[in-house]
Structures are given as C-alpha cells and as structure tokens.
Amino acid sequence: MKGQTSKIVTVSLLLNDINQNRQFFRIPDNIKGTEELKNYILQRYKPLKGILEGFVDNKRLIVQWYPEDVDDEAEKYHLKALQLSKKKEYLHAIQCWEKSIQLNSGDVEYLYKLGLVYFEMKKFREALGYLKNAIEICPIHYRSNLLMGISLTKLRKFGEAEKYIIESNILNRSNILTYLNLGAIYSIQKRFNEAIDMFNTTIKISPNEARAYLGLAKIYIMLNDIDAANSYLSKVIEMAPGTTMAEYARRSIRFTDDEDKTSTPSVESRQQKFTKGLVGYLSGQYESAASEYKGYLNTHPNDDYAWYLYGETRLRTGDLNEASDCFKRAVRIRPNRSLYHKSMGVTFYLSGKTHEGMQALKKTLELGKKDPLTLTLMGVFQLRMKHVDESIELLESALRLNPNNPLAMYHLALAHLRKEDRKKAVQIVDDILAFDFYLPIKHHAKNLKSKISASEGMA
Image 1 (cartoon, helix red, strand yellow):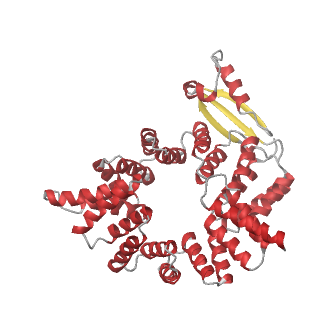
Image 2 (cartoon, rainbow, N blue to C red):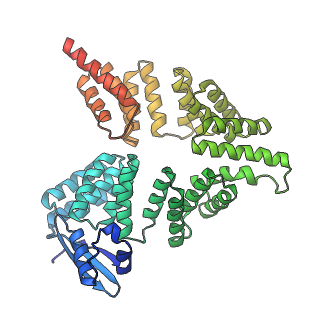
Image 3 (cartoon, rainbow, N blue to C red):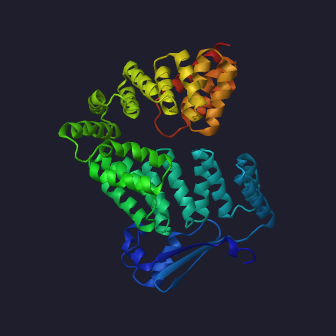
C-alpha cells in the first residue's frame, strides 16, 4: 500500500443507522447479522476501480476505499493544480488535473477536484460529468455525492439532487451542508415540514449557523407565522452581523419591530400590510402583494425598500410603467443603492428603452454592482445600439462570471452573427439548446438556428 494510505476514503456507519434505513439501502429482510450487513454494504458500494474494505468496530461499520496504485508523476501534477486553483488560475489547474488522470485514471481525488473547479466556474454540466465518474470509481466519496447534488440543484433538477445529497448525508451525518441543501430543496418544493426538520438538525449540529436560521425564517414568512419568522431573523442578525444575510433579515424584521410594541391598531394594520405584501411576494401571489404594498406606502411614502419591493412585484405582473415609477421613487429616497438602479435597468430593458437602460446600469456599475445580469443587459443595450464589439466584450464578461446564462449566450450569438461569424453563432445556439431544463429563450434559439441554416442554404 505504498503511498495509498494518504488516499484512503473512510466512512463510519452506525449499525443502528443502517438498520433504521434498510429501505434506503434496499437491504433484504433475510439479511440480519452484522457480518451479513457488512458484506451487503460492501457489495452495494462496490467500486468501478480501487479497493473497498470494511470492518466492524464496536457498533460501527467502517468502510474504506483506496486506489489500486499511486502514480508519483500524477501526484506532481495534482499538487501543482492545487496551487493554481488556490490562485483561481482554473484553466491551467484543469490542464494539470487532466494530465494526472491520463497517468492514473483510478484516483478519485483528481476527478473530484476537476468537478469542484468546474463548479467554481459555474460550469455545472461539465462538473456533473467528472463527479459522476468520481462516484462510479468511489461510491462512498461523500463529497462528490454532495457536490453532484448541489450542481443538479443549480440546474433545477431537484429530484435528482435530493438523491445524491441524501446519499452524502447517509455517508457523513456530521456535514451541515447536506442538511442545509436538503432544507433549501424542500423549501422550494414547499415540503415545509421536511425543510424545517433539516434546518433544525443543522442548528443542533452547529448552533451558530446563520443560514439555517434564515432558511427557517423564510419558511415561516411563507407560512404567515410572523412571530416565528421574526425570532429567526433576529438570530440571523445576531449570528452574522454586517453580512448580506443580516441586511436581508434586518429589512424583513423591521416592519413589525421598528415601531413601539404599544402601537395603535392603525399602526399595526399598516405593519400587517407590509408583512402580507412580503408573504404574497415570496409565495408568488403578486397581485395580492402589490395591493398590500400600495396600502403600506400610502402611509410610509419614504420607505425606499418598500418602493423597491413594490416595483419588483409590478415587474412580475407586467406593469412596467408602474414598476419604473416605483424604482425611481426608491432611487430618489436612497440614490446610492445599486440594487434600485439595476432594477430600473431591467425595467427599461423589458420596455425597450435602450438609452435610459444604459444610464441606469452605468450607475449600477459606478456603485460597485458588477454582476452577470448587469453586464448581460449592458451587452444587450450595446448590441441594440449596433456597438457589436463592445457588446461581445460585455457579454463574454457576463459569461465568465456565470457560464449558465442563456440570455447572454443568445445575444452573444446574435452579435457574432452581426460579424458574419455563423459558425460561432450556431455553436452558441447549440449550447443553449443543450440545456436540459425548460427555458423560454430556447424557442428564440431554435428560430435563430433555422434562420442561419436557411441563409446558408441560399448562399
């Protein structure tokens, strides 16, 4: 086992936990004894490559995997890749890990790290390929299972994601990320009882985990249990002061806490309107939310965040003029908030107001908000103004920040088409059509590809 000891992957499974999850493991009823359980688990996790061993220690089944061999040259590339990855020189790191795999394809760590670096680059589909291979080689590699699940979540494949994250959780009960991610999935699916269980378990393991308290707060907001929501939001502020989470929590809680507890019924009624607006917004009941926000703003006209939320609600109901007016009011009250300028830019994009949109997004950049959507929309505006090279530069910058950005991809294809680069345009369109999940822009991409094919046929 020369050099292999450092490569061992170990999981420790409570025998009682295995028996309580017989259905998950699909253990037949006739398998009862400890030795039979051990042999069954080893067979269940039989690797494609490498060596899997197991032994019982007191009340635990210890399962270990290690590669059949360790290649010194592959390890040199691996160590170099780790250094490059820390410097965020991802492309060079990828090249080194690929060389490691060429020299030793049976080392799960190389595959996992490649999956991780593609995940960091937001290239989730590429990450899935390496992570799937890692799990085949070492099925007990709980980190690969977890990252596989999170990547699938990013692609909105929640059912598949749940399976991999549960697998990771079974293999490593102490990792709070499994509980947090399952809680997030169940919240999205409105399986609130299960989500609450996951977040509460996180808190039992890590009492100061602010993300778990925030997850609970969002659930109770959707359940319209404001007292419970506020108590968890207060914990977020306490646990993570000065963070984006704390800022979100502060804004959410103040609508019931910033007035004296001896408030008159009319004040309480106004507070309830904002709370109901927030509940409606989070639940997707936008018309109801808009009505509540409007009632709240009649008596709180200087609340910039309320104007912003009202505008976001009107965006979703398609009332672009009213949304624009809301964001302008928010900007007048608090002009240095980049979020408000960005939302104005989105509204102008949807209403076809290119010049106004560019001005709003330039202000967004000046205030430090350089995110994929801002860069994408600026690229779209530049394309509308026939500034093709500037458009390509902005859209490529947006895609470097988030490669899974179909809006940027579609307009980048249009930009390359303007430059008569049909081959590049078709390649980008094919990438859009390769997305597994539903995208409205796929319809436009199909039409664009048909037009390109038709024009080539006429040439």
